[in-house]
Amino acid sequence: MDSLTKTKIKLLAKSPFIATVGLACKHSMDENVPTACTDGVSIKYGTKFWNKLDSEEQIGLMAHEIWHIVLSHMHRRGDRSPKRWNVAGDHVINLMLKSQGYTLPAGGLADPQYMDLDTDSVYEKLPDETEDSPEYGDGDWDDLEEPAEGDKQAAELATKEILAKAVQSARMTKDYGSLPENIKRLLDDTLQPKISWPQLLINYMTEKAKDDYSWQRPNRRFRDIYLPSLYSESMGELVVAIDTSGSVDDTLVNQFLVEVKALHEDVQPSKTTILAIDTQINGKPYTVSKDEQFIPEDVGVEGGGGTDFLPAFNYTEDNPTQCLIYLTDGYANTDLEEPNHDVLWLIYDNNNFTSPFGTVIYVD
Image (cartoon, rainbow, N blue to C red; front, side):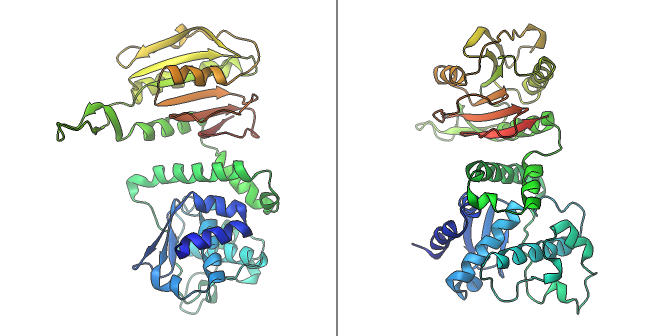
């Protein structure tokens, strides 16, 4: 067993929440990295630096990098100074880890004057960098790696998905409950951002449609073997389930249908199917192909009973799809078998919804 795997296992015993985030990330050694760095979805460790640390320091270093991901330091900097922002984040993380009994590599920034402050506050309090500024340290601790310009949105979405799954699995544990309240609020703000849910929806679906490996068209370079070709003109079939139990606001349903129309036109799924569901699929599914016009007024949204998610997943099992979008308040049995397609939950008026799988967007 390699040392990175051993460290992840040891970290799991110290902090299940942090370890859960770490297990969802890619970890690797890199000869060209001075200490360690992260881009929000992967972590690189400098080979020489890692090998000179003892096992406790390795745990501390891994926890430090994972906390950069938890605190979304890569995506929250904005137009602030990269080094000053990195330094502020290092003070916050190292002070917290030391207070929790972690052992950190020598030279890590942890000025006690910044104890209990968040990264934004430490950034404002840091003096301008000079050659003799002790707050900036004397080591090479530049560990926030910027994603490539075209990959920033994808990286941020990937980070949020990692955090959402970790929070959902750890929310009821003692480890998560012991997190400082300011960090819980930050996680809530990150996972339930102020950006409008329609924009999040179009971001998600656009990313899914981009450079999709599709079996619809064979790769012509391999005539004897059927391999997928890189196919980006449109995504596959899309199924949209709308909770019509009566608990989801009619105005929201109408707005949602307008957004689905925009998706149908912009993302161009090969087919879009709308299901109106309470405890069963009500009426005939509304289906339009890629080249047909989506007319929201033609979609029937009958219902009024209870809520059951199973009919939608039974439908996609019988009618294979690439992605299921489910608009619901989430108050139903979530003991479901994970399907072999993507699932996007649009959750209305229920911030305590725990997703059994898939990605969650909270709708205001």
